[in-house]
Figure 1: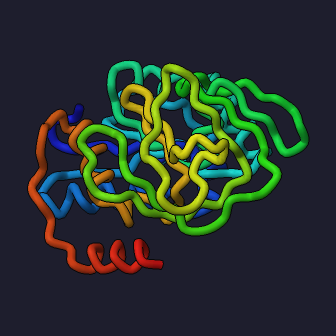
Figure 2: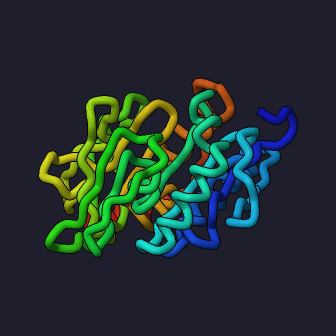
Length: 236
């Protein structure tokens, strides 16, 4: 990791940013700056190879055609996969789960090989999942309920090398009836929560930052407006 500045990779915002998920990188940067740490966002577009030298990475959601572009790019430039293999944290939102999986099926029924960072497969479901989603975290280190907004038609099945992020208490989650939301494999974490997710889940944001910084704890932040947002959304 850089000694002076934490570098946050915003991966393919030109094709994987349909739902404003790039805001997750902003949340990470702001939480670092509020603690007196230097941080910058490095945008990686289709014009750029993916570096493996950054400290943390985020990817957002997209539609079928954009998913194909992202899959080809991340396969051609394996920097993200190489970084994750070294334990660098990666946050994948919605369609990014599918892109990083073993394979995903398009709405037209075509099966596309994924990047292979998640042991998951995804197929279209009959009914689209739209609305508030909440879950009890099953990832070690998280204690607070997870809250977000889901909007996806994909149903993601976890293989033996992948685990869930949370157990659904409201909404659909992964959409295959296993009661799980999201996926965790090594340092790579995926969720169907939009929002962006980290704005509503500061504990999750700090979990990723602690991994990026290689520390066991961070200075607490007093943000009552975030607490109010969480309470309101968990009651919604």
